[in-house]
Length: 80
Image (tube, rainbow, N blue to C red; front, side, top):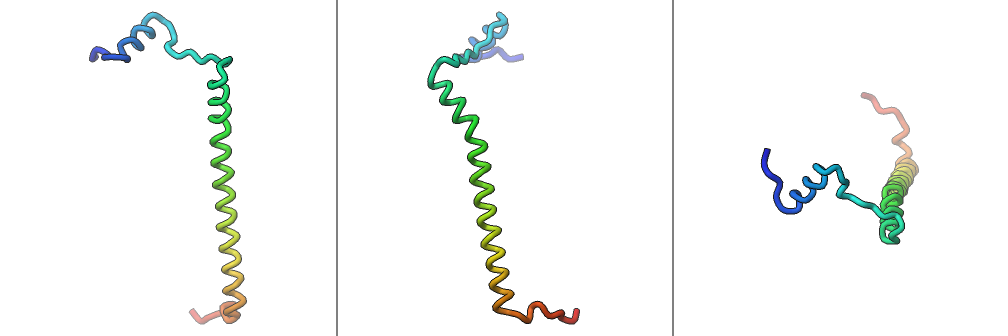
């Protein structure tokens, strides 16, 4: 196995000693804000996506209705 280099060497040493190299201090305001934004972001993107899909579907329905009104013969059965 290759020897870790640079910052990875320090990370490997901490792991070998049983210490966690990651410390999240929840009393830090920047961490709290980051957690809040990170937790909200997926829901915000999902809401934007659902809104745009609903808008596009509504435009499709309006266009289909317009075509049915403009071309009333499309309701008639055509020979296959």
